[in-house]
Length: 366
Length: 174
Image 1 (cartoon, one colour):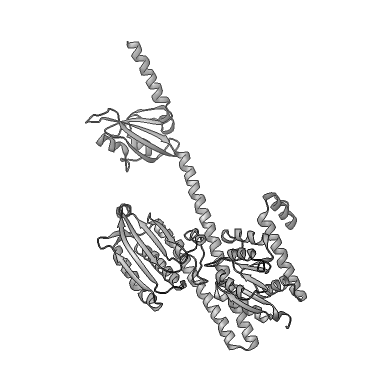
Image 2 (cartoon, chains in turn purple, yellow):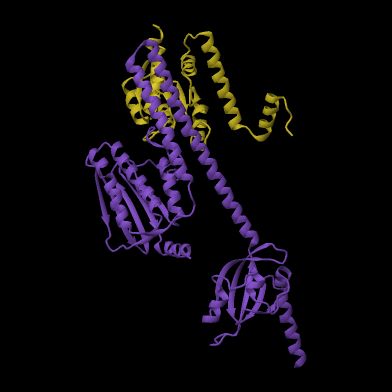
C-alpha cells in the first residue's frame, strides 16, 4: 500500500512539474509554498518569497489580484497580468486562481495557474502599430489632398487676378482676389482643425451635466439655424445627472455634428428643416443623438464617413470634423454610428459608458 | 478664335472656386462653358445640351464623378463624349480605384490638382483634336506620356517597377 501511494505521489509530482503552465501554490500571506519547473525556469527560485515579489518584483499586492478574491470567496478568478522574468524580460500571462481545498470556509492555500501569452500580446501590439501606421498614412494622404485643393484655389485666384489686370476688368480682379482670400482662410482653418485632430490622447475628465452641454450647443447654433429657416431643438431626459466627460472634447463633437446637420438641411431641396439634439440613457449607456431631415448620405460616402479625410461640402469644410469626432468619442471609450439614406435625413449617435468613465475619472484623481 | 468658340465644355466640380478658375481659363481660350456642381446637376445639363467635352471632378456629393461616368457609358450618344478627369484624389485610396475603372474603359485622361491653366487648355485642345501651338502640342504630349506612365506604374508588379527604375535612373537596384 505504501508503495502504491508512493507511485501516485511521484506521478502527481511529475504532472505538477511538467505541465506546460506556470503553477504556484501560495499561502494566506501571499508567500509561495510550491512552484513547478516551468515557473522556476521563467521566474527563478521562488519558495517562501511573496508571489508579487517574484512575479512582478513589486513590494505590495498587485492591483486586481485574483488570488486575493479567491481567498475571500473561494471561487475561481481570472485576470491578465504582466510580470518580469528572471532575465529581466517582460512576461505576459493569463492567470486563474482556485482554492486548494474545495468548499472550505477558511482557505489557507490558493493555487495559481498561468499560461504565457507574451507571443500573443506581441502580435497584438504589432497589429495595433500597423493599424496606427495605416491611419497615419490615410491622414497624410487626406492632408495632401486638402492642400492640393487649396493650391488649386490659389492658382485659380492668381490666374483670374492676372487676367483681370490684363483686361483692366475690375470685377474680375475682385473675383480673383476673393478666391485668394478664401483659400488663405482655408489654410488657417485646415491647420486649426488638424491641430485639434492631433491633440491629446487621454480625455481630461470632469463632472459635467450632459443636458447643460446640449443646451449650450443649442444656444450657440440657434441663431445660425434660424437665419436659414431651420428649427433647432433639444430633447433632454431630465433624470440624467452629472457624468465625467472631457467637456471641451464632447462640445467639439456636438458642434461638429450640429453644424453638419445644418449643412445637410441647407443642401436639401425640401422645406421645413429641423435639427434635434436628443439626450437619453438606455441600458446604462449615455446617448447623444443629432437628428436632421436634410439631404441624407449616400451609401458610398457613409462607408467612409468616419475613416476618411474628405469633404462633400464643395470646399466649405476641411474633411476633418467627423474624424476628430470619432477620435474624441473613442478616447472616451464610446462609439459613434450613423443611420441615413439619401434624401431621408440622418441620425448620428454617440454612445458613452458612464460607469467606465467614472472608473477612469476615479483613477485619474488618485 | 472663331473655331474654338463653337466647342462647348461642361465643367463639373463641387468647389465653386475651381469652377470659376477652369471656366475663366476656358473662356479666355475661346470655349463656351457650362457649369455643374455635382453628377446629378451635370446629367441635367447634358440632357439639355450635349457638350463637346466634360471636365470632371471625382469626389463630389450626390453623384460622384465615377458614377456619372458609368451612367454616360450606358447611353449611346453620351458614351462618346470625351472626358478629362481633374482630381486631387488621383493616387490616394479614395480615388485610385475609381480612376483605374475610368481610364481603362473610356476616352480621355486625367489631370491632378493643382492644374496650371496652360496645361489644362493644352489637354482640352488635344483631346478635341484642335489646332494647337507648338508649345501646346508639347505640353499635351507630356501630359499624355505622364498619364500612360502613371497607369503603368499603378498596375506594375515589383519586378517591373525595379526594371523601370533602373531604366529611368540608370542605377542598379541594390
